[in-house]
Length: 290
Image 1 (cartoon, rainbow, N blue to C red):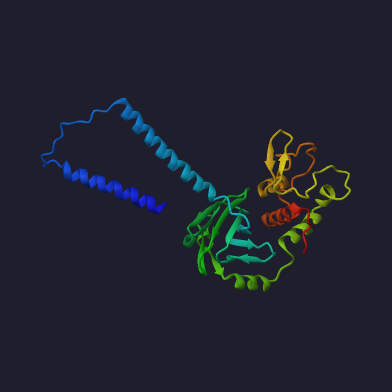
Image 2 (spheres, rainbow, N blue to C red):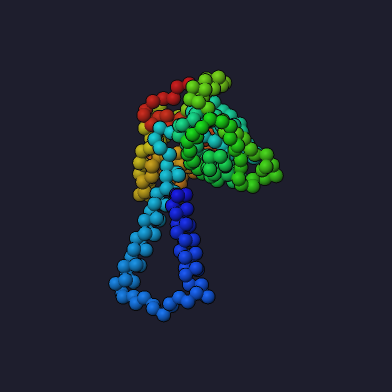
């Protein structure tokens, strides 16, 4: 993209200088022969211009959409922003505050959530920045190409101590990253923590077992199309699972009564991440192991 921009800029300035020199006021240039344009010429030029700009639009839109679609097998890490810290949670249950350890040369997909106000995840060295908005998940992915320590900032004014909301990204060799993960104190994997919370909140009473309440089973739910009572069909992704916990009557699965109570105020963002990780772990029908 930078190469194209430089070529277009060079062409523009070349033509500008050429015509400025050839047709300057003191030059005795022939300005009397205007080009006669036929409708064929006008239609052809307009069509060519339209096709060129349409191609640039499709190219730009494709690149823009790729920003939000992480490649398969990306390392998934959750990040919760709050006044005034960044809290990361790895799939294995490792937690960090104002630090994020990642392996080099591996695509990392971040699921970002805010517990209070709007923040903005900004790593200048990686050229990545994304707003973190309360009430929804934001997705961001990148791949660090060299090891080192890089600055993490909040690029959105989020309160009186906004300037203190900083951190660092530690990019490590794969073996060092694996060793670092094994040295951290963990209380079970993120999915296992979600499994415990799932039962603590009583969710298993309706969604599993022999409950008399008829609720959708969650085995194999993640990533599957879900027909809704209003006729729509949505994919059971992280957004759908989160919203179903907090706003269970907004998107009711077809064939079920809207009897589930909202858990808004009972589960914070970190708890939601655990629940989502647990339900994701059931995608293949496998129970999360501690």
